[in-house]
Image (cartoon, rainbow, N blue to C red; front, side, top):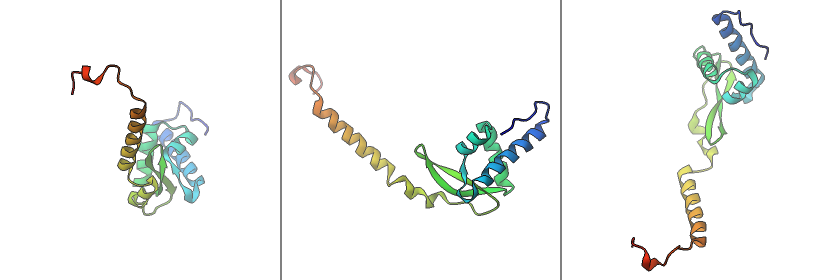
Length: 130
């Protein structure tokens, strides 16, 4: 993305950034792009990008086409044009089941591995906690 001139007005900078963001989203076609991907392509600051995405959604220039799993969280993938936003509930199944139960199972397995190799430093009779 070419950088804008420091002499540009704030309104011109905003229009320039929005155009760059919208162009990248259009290149993504129906697959859509997540905010981290848009940020990497356009080099727009995160807070600025979120403001632009909210504004573009309010004007119905973009909508949420799908949800993607990214770093243990679901992120919206933005698609150009007006449309109905994809519901997060439809994509929750991609998380692979109940996350809380998975975490409890993992903790239990780690505890069992630790308990196998654990040896007390002193005799149990010498401990004051019983």
